[in-house]
Length: 179
Image (cartoon, rainbow, N blue to C red):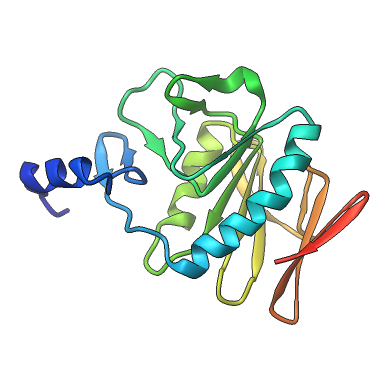
């Protein structure tokens, strides 16, 4: 583990560079800013999923918004997007139990290392997207473990996702979108 000088942390905070940093049981994980392609995929995805979530009574949140272990101060993650029932919202963000978390992969990120944590705070589903190839994976919480699910159908939104010729295709009752 690398020790980070307080001056660097203070500078990151002052410049707003710490908004996506995560705290894993008291251990700081500094997350670099997302690439342009990462942001483009995330933005387009949010424009499609947010209205679907709202129609289903879910809140839609995007980076930087924290997902916290309920009742614990120094344990949170900052997924790219979250969809959750209003009753799990708090002043600090979402308190565990998000219906869906979206992670868009970045080089050297820790998405797959977060899966056990997401299961432990009762996240329902985790959608993982590789922004270059648009490859998509879905993990669902089954008895406190995130397990891969095929085909990729996000239950809480009623959206099927698949990669077709390098395009992420989303299909739901009444619509489709290509990202």
